[in-house]
Length: 526
Image (cartoon, rainbow, N blue to C red; front, side, top):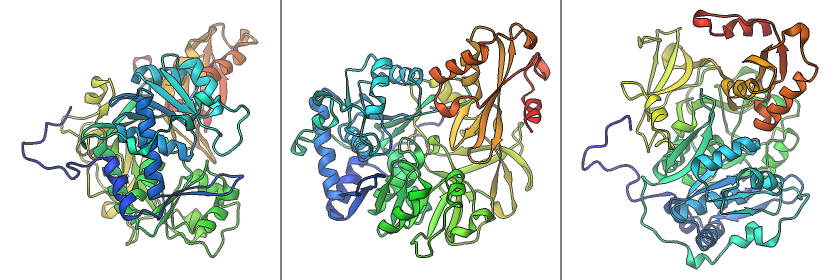
């Protein structure tokens, strides 16, 4: 690791504790209180109290052990938002397996990479994805399929022997093991600046850190009801919403996905007081009437107090975080005014640096490179799984994690997002590496070179556009080249990574060392 090991005798904040400890604690002191409320689109809501959920997790953990899952095994959880996703995640934590939560928009080739890279022993998925998982993750020992697709009736009901329900055992047989906060807990694959996603490994201490610190940043209490519709396979919903709710003993309402037409009805029905959101969702909500009698007191999103969304009548705090930071490294103030459109100030739990390319401090009003310092395995991720080189290379000589983001310093310590490291796109809240798309397209016969840049989008923030130099030149462009490129992208890339436009050119603008001058390409889009 990049940071030196802690000195002998140092006691961590979660010594002797782990994720199962937290769930068991809440099952004892909040036993009848609603923990998770599943709010499908076309069926009545279902409620799991802390006691009920804890019992079902124990039964599933016992069943996974009977199916051969051992401590240290990796289990793919390829599910849209649903209660089964949370049962599986906590059951893995209970027995000491590692939950690998994967983006359900991933293409088959991506799932093949994820499964092989981590060495997944088994997968838990839903009917809509079962055939794809079976076809591309061929080294799994077994696969279990839930009975629905995010609350919707499936086209094909899975056989009983492959059903998720068949996994459950007796909660009295739940596995027992010594709590180890340093033990691996979960993995999320996240796009980096290289073509292959990195596997971000969290420990149990990381998960507990996310629960405790997110709850503090969000001013969550046991009386709060957190409305959750962002995907639970990502840090935002998993840690900012669900784990933070668990820490304080509140309630978390889970929807299959965001729905502007259903948002306010669900919020009012369950008395929701908090939500973590993104600009895409808020823009969509502007098209619907905001009820005056909602119970929301706070929302969290990318920026503080965005003027365009004042109509909601809710205080909106900004924040910045990554899968690698588990929680917010920069966050707005709940009880004090914030600089509008800033992300907030540096969180007290971290050290934040903003510097130029030579490491010199950035002055107020200037834009610089953002880096963050914490404790690996606690306030920062443990490592990139099976990639020691990438782990080492992501920290500077001072032990700061290099985020790849650029930010602007404002007065009084507020920080505004500046721009992104080149070749990274933000598509509807999803990080996309341009090089990943370029490598797929470069393999298509007839393509000489491809360059992907971001185009501004009203709802998704950015979308990918690719400029291509064809082998034969634009004048002799093969009729099937466009279609072949589209087909290759559909086969190898998740839908949000697929280019929205394909532009054929005879040459690309160049900078030094013959690199493509992507800034010039972006000007063409403007």
